[in-house]
Length: 154
Image (cartoon, rainbow, N blue to C red; front, side):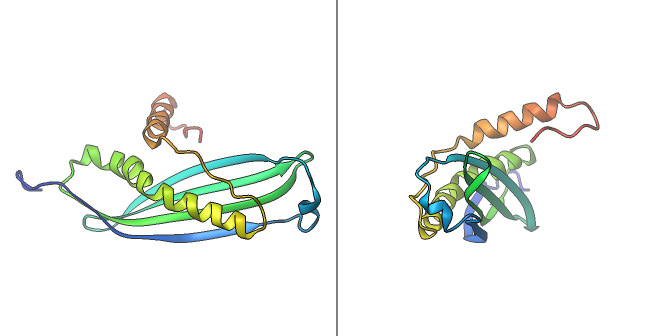
């Protein structure tokens, strides 16, 4: 990295890497009048694929269930992006990958989730905004609190 080089951040490509939808109790589940319990889980992965080129994948899993563990639906999308990130100090790279990139990917993942649920015959689920900075900080604190050799709780 040269001393005067300006940081570079650009979006090269945004795409759905994986999408799955399950409605295991259809058609019976469509007759239920109870409101399902919605559960949302997020996971972010980032890795280098070339010099200054990174792939970041935001995986969002949304499940809806009724009492007695009856699954209404389960949808998961792995929304990915290829980003060019150059001339960023090594200490700042992880926050860019784990905060900045997921902030860009989340609206696309939210749309894919809502569309899949609607196509399955249910009312759309609109995911609330996510504070990826707060999630990142919480994960860092958990990792720091973990004993050496112990995996952090996910």
